[in-house]
Amino acid sequence: MSNRYDNKSFTQAKAEPRAPQRRRVHGGSAAQPPMAFDVGYGSAPPAAPVRTWRSTVVGFAIGFGIVLALAMKWLMGYQIDSAQERHEQQKAMRAAAARCYELASNAAINACLKDVEARGREAQ
Image 1 (cartoon, helix red, strand yellow):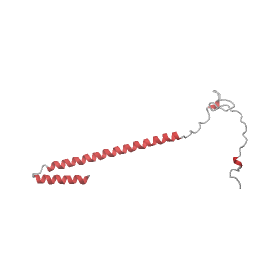
Image 2 (cartoon, one colour):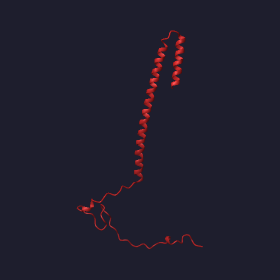
Image 3 (cartoon, one colour):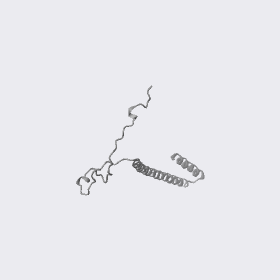
Image 4 (tube, one colour):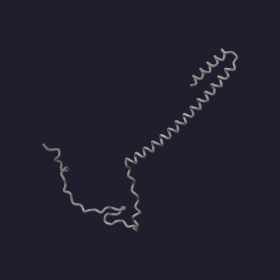
């Protein structure tokens, strides 16, 4: 019966000693540091930016803020329009109630006010 760990890929390979490397300073090679007057030093195209989870979170937060601002703008517009409609309806009901009081008898005034109130409930 063979052991499942008998695979050759799990055997340790001999590590070859590596020569110590110099630290790169300002993008120069390890053998020769870049000079200030080197023509090729600034001509290389910049590397593509690395996307990290922080930049993703910041992008998401900015996008969410924009969506939230647009939603608030729509909501405020809707509330203002609804309030204007409600004020117009109340103004029309007050005008109709004022016309009711121009009638001669109390019975006619009460009937007119009940009719105005019923129409106001239907409008809402």
